[in-house]
Length: 245
Length: 231
Image (cartoon, rainbow over all chains, first blue to last red):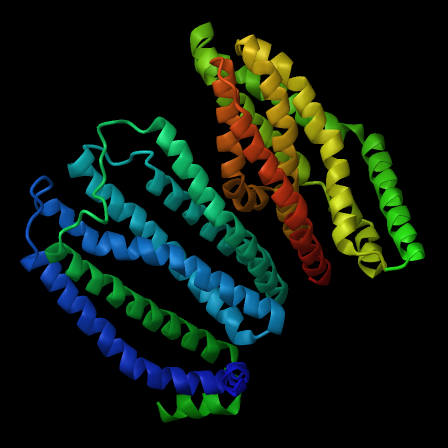
């Protein structure tokens, strides 16, 4: 039953299986993203207060959701790396860190672009924005820690420890920031509540979120495949692939 | 675990505590510099923002807490440095005594000689920044409890970066985001208390943070020290 898990330790096996998975996942991701984007951007009704500017949620919300789940994916990969010393987990952790930082940054940028027409300002110290900013710092800390070590074996283990510490802390940070914000909340700002969103706007959003998850999987695997090829560049099977190409 | 093992654990811990306190006592500048830092940086704010007593009173809880947090961060940087440089750390790793308890005691000793003095010095800063007198007891309390969590969290970062040549800036980058919850509740407790409200809730949550970091941080510290010595 656990053989698939042990096989994950073999870069070659991963390279083969991820190639097959990509053949299936990449088209699904593309299809979902195209359908969701066209539906959301062209056919979903305009918001009665925000007009068309709300449509940025079709990028903003999936990116924000993934930026947080990406942290957990990274931390779980880090834990697997620490416990079983699995090389692939280390590669997954590093790829997830880079992608997570990018997604978090995108979430902040799209949020601030959305904020300009809606709130009249680029930046508000809102609870979710603040948590997202702290999340970005956590990602950047992990990337910086990895870069600072000369010995890359220790670097990835140190990053895994830091990622796990962050995992314990993230719920606490989110709750604290929520609490802090509820004390200072200015009355004029009202975010769209998830529950109050109309189904005609919600379905394309759902499709976009699922599509982004698939996209994340595809991007993560592509990232990992590249790293695997670089790491294993001296082995026979990689040289075979290169020669065939 | 039988009685003799128990005894040796306690003995080991008290020996560690004694060693750490002696070392810190002999290098007084390590404990005094954060205090100086607190006083100097806090006295810059009236120059930079405004010497207006009302403005200062409003900003005081936040300023004192943020600066105390930075002072804690600066002092944690050197926590494992000398042990790492002179090889004592490797001996601790080889010790039969668990690294978890060793880190726990070490961090506690560090807190006794940095966090506690910071908390005790804070009333003077409070007077300089015109914090209402009603806030001062809570300021001391919140800093006492809060700096303990800060030192524990900072120890993780310190253990992760001890093997690196230039760990200072990196340490702040990886540790400061983790300080956010403590800062929020600590500064808010002082602010409310200065307005005359009772703040048992905030202090209780600070205490909860302390207990959580007390129980879990030494695990991470021990793991991080092993990695740092390996590299």
